[in-house]
Image (cartoon, one colour):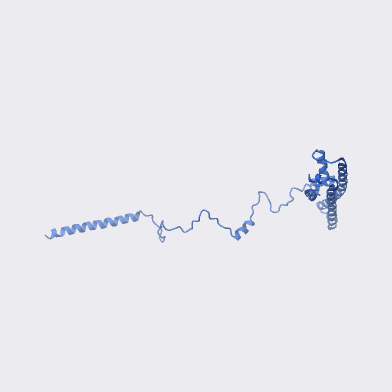
Length: 227
């Protein structure tokens, strides 16, 4: 009778014990399936935001003053370029280093082309030059009277003859300076004397060309000038 009363109790205990063991085993199996972590490393959490802040697509980092200053001093050089190269590199073969070939030709021929244009301000402000007018007449693009043409031709020849004399002097003085520099025989006295004289001749040459443009206004009519 005692065993009959205890049998249901033993059965219930057996099932409870079996269920507890099964639960414990399931927990152990679940833990073993997780990746091992180093000691001292906190468990990862997918819901925890990353340490770095995600910036919006439109965000543009601003340069600091130090970054701007550094960029200004670190301009890339063109391949083969030297930081000590002369701005006049390639002009060593010029006959006269201070004058281009076109400058020399213009000075010796009495043209108004040397130094970027001897009468440039007059030309750009509507004062025609005799050479341009005569060229336009010869090309059939401009009309003047016979009297006007004779006066313009005379004015041009006067300007040209004066300009040639001055131009030759400039070329001679510049040649002396250039040769003395090349031969290492230059002196302060020679340099000062020649350069100052070249400056005066340059001013005289500009006046010859500019005054000629002004004289053209006395020969041509207003309508002709406006054209």
